[in-house]
Length: 153
Image 1 (tube, helix red, strand yellow):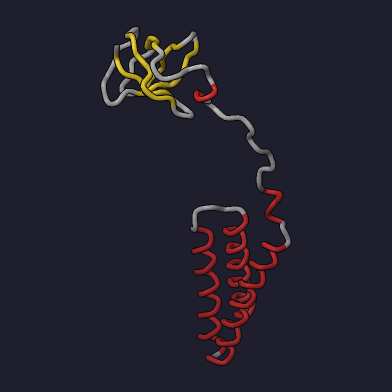
Image 2 (cartoon, helix red, strand yellow):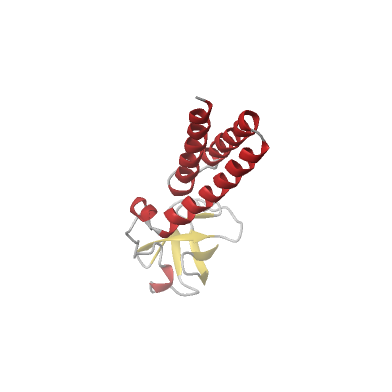
């Protein structure tokens, strides 16, 4: 009965360890799996002595490493991952016909970021620290890939 208990502890620990690596994020299942494996090895030492305990400890380590290598090489974890890629980008301001010196009007308050209307285009804008209310006239001082830097006129 003790042997079944020990094998069950180690088996549950190995399953939790594999689940941690392949599916469950957060380190908790791996720690609990390590505790189960350790409990199984310690029970072996207590029940069967140091020679058998050493063999079970070594077997547990080798089995853990072997299972991890097997599951990572078998690519079985790939069926849990996403296979699609996002192609688009957001706020591609640098491709709009906006250049330094252009003027516009704030659509929302800039604290220090918000939305401005330049050449009938709504774009994300930022000030150099000033807070601006909406419907204030602004001038573009810099165009970045995803926003423009403005100053009050």
